[in-house]
Amino acid sequence: MLAVVFQVRGDDLCLLLWRRTENPCADTWALPGGAVGPDETLEQSVRRHLAAKVDVREMSYLEQLRTVSDPLRHPGPRLLATAYLGLVPSDLDPVLPADTAWHPVGGTPATAFDHGALAIAGRDRLRAKLSYTNLGYALAPPQFTIAELRAVYVAALGHDVSATNLRRVLLRRAVLEPTGEIAQPDSAGGRPPARFRFRDRGYRVTDPAAVLRPPQSRS
Amino acid sequence: MLAVVFQVRGDDLCLLLWRRTENPCADTWALPGGAVGPDETLEQSVRRHLAAKVDVREMSYLEQLRTVSDPLRHPGPRLLATAYLGLVPSDLDPVLPADTAWHPVGGTPATAFDHGALAIAGRDRLRAKLSYTNLGYALAPPQFTIAELRAVYVAALGHDVSATNLRRVLLRRAVLEPTGEIAQPDSAGGRPPARFRFRDRGYRVTDPAAVLRPPQSRS
DNA sequence: GCAAAAGTGTTCGCCCTACACCCATGT
DNA sequence: ACATGGGTGTAGGGCGAACACTTTTGC
Image (cartoon, rainbow over all chains, first blue to last red):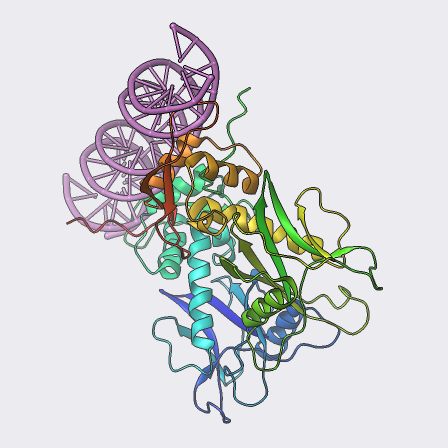
């Protein structure tokens, strides 16, 4: 059982990694994980390990990524592993043990086994779902201005995003709602921005984008 | 390891099921599956079991669905199972053992354990991917008229599809290409239809639908 | 007044749907 | 000729990107 945990920190999308000190793969970085207990589900196991070893309790989203099974993926006896994609909101800063740290994806160091491929798969799944779901709620703090939210999307997607269009798209889809509050303008002046929140703090598909959708039953 | 295998047969999307004769869950229908060998990947295992026990060799598509892990999902010792989604083209008719059969989804009989939920998950994944990928190639025969392809999509999606729009969408996306051949008209007359094929017989995402896509680098 | 940042109006193009119409064949 | 099914033309709506413009603040 492995966890691909992302958090936007500063301008980067970061991945939680753990430094291996023993062979095999000593001095490389690995995904956090561990054995599954006999009476827990895989998801419970992920949450347990992350809470116990890494003090990451506030996981805003957790989804099964995939199960890897290559007999050669790991030296020694055949080892299956189910990887999960986890997200942590950008306003939290969980305390980490000395051997674990956040690494910007892209500047990721050498990773153990097939963990690098799993991290890429997780990153791509995150990026895809940011486009057609409300998954941003899992990366963003409870409240934010459009500019702050834009920074989260830019970090996660890895390319520029227009604040104007981000605002319009997410409001039209009723993903965001204004809180009514107005934030303080930047030190350099400027119009004070409105604060927003995500309407739902649970996963929702907002744009089925279903081409070939069922014909309109006109009223 | 379990397999959720679909094929369009006639007007129905059908699921391959196997009749259990022993307890637990005697006289219910179950997904085909079996144990994973020590030196094979999960995917190899799915292919092996289906080829050996069910004579389904020509799987046009195979994708991991998810791994279920509930300790109570199965009586007795805790049993993990990774489910795969498999598709068989509609022009094949593999010979099946006496205890296995195709069942129209929707008219599915009582299923064992959590297999019903896995079947639904597989069906929904198939339906979603038909909209934004070229996955139709895995359900359709090598050549077909638009009317025949439409029948496949109607069966798989479970709702009506306009032949006019299906044609245009799939041609614009360069998913289909004409073979140049013209089929015989129906017995009742009518203009003879052109034959088409899928341009790629491998999985391809044709409509990233990526809202929030990277800004245009205008030339 | 001026710079800076937020927010709005507007245009443009693309894509999908729906529906009317034309085409090619059998009877 | 007419019915039947295949194929094309076209109009309408929706949505997102781009960009100009207005609003509200600090200096």
